Length: 224
Length: 224
Image (spheres, chains in turn purple, brown):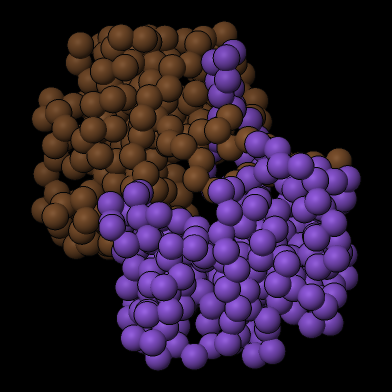
């Protein structure tokens, strides 16, 4: 089955203390977003790429593509007020039935193995959410104070989260709810079963200046 | 009130793919454990340091102290079969009432601000557990499958966890239970209230080759 990915890049530069939205920051030679897109086409050269960008960033993106001679074919959809709306807009660009991943634009360190796990698991089970173990002890907090919980009972969630396109489109017909933090939460709210698969620890979301530095080290390790 | 710390260094090198126990690995110029100890004496030069080491690593530690001319005063207690037992052995070296922290030997990146938060909060509230926000989405997993949970309801737990020494000693009189993964869990099982304070994101536990590289970057950032 054909594969596609919706790359959501709606971020600002606020946590990065930067004027430039974080997905456009030059990192390891070019804007982060270009690295992210390349991971997908290197995994499958036939991958259909849909990039979701805020309307007022599209011109800048086009200029960057020219400046960096970035020629990977992709379509661009318009970002919405919420991530939910952005993904929904991206899904409209997917016309044929396929496996569709939804991926954070600022996760350029997703490994080929994670991509393989995600698309293969989704092909078999209908969906795939990449997760990793929780390494630190965790505590639950609330009005009651806080209490220790067993970290073995929790997983850290990454992207790409992969689904059959028709099924994901159907779940995005729901009204928006404020606990929709990722696609898995939207998909399961519609009554569907979630299947987990193994992500890679390096697949961090680059959102702070510290992440830029740590990510660069991980990038060099993964390519050496 | 006087301050002390029990630094628990019972690790092997297995996850590090190293013959040398991880706390002794040379990192940023010297064994990790020496960096960790120094963070505490730099914070408070009067800090009483108790190092808990497996019996068969004590000779190696002495040799390393000579080799690196490491002259920070500290006593050494013998590690037990569990972390619980190791901390209990360490507590026996604390004779006078004081604030006692329990810290992982392989967390050399604890900041002065975190140490200040921990000891000050414990002095005021009886105990202090340093935590940071959960950055990634998390899911709870179990026999039921998995479900999204609100990450705002969880915190990542670090060390040092700081208590009044008499109170911590009393809680360590309990029989060992297998959910005792850190001192907070021992302390609250004895009916005490936990107080959280702010840790620092860089305060990672160095347990894998990837952590060594990431940690080195964080070390240079924190000292620049």
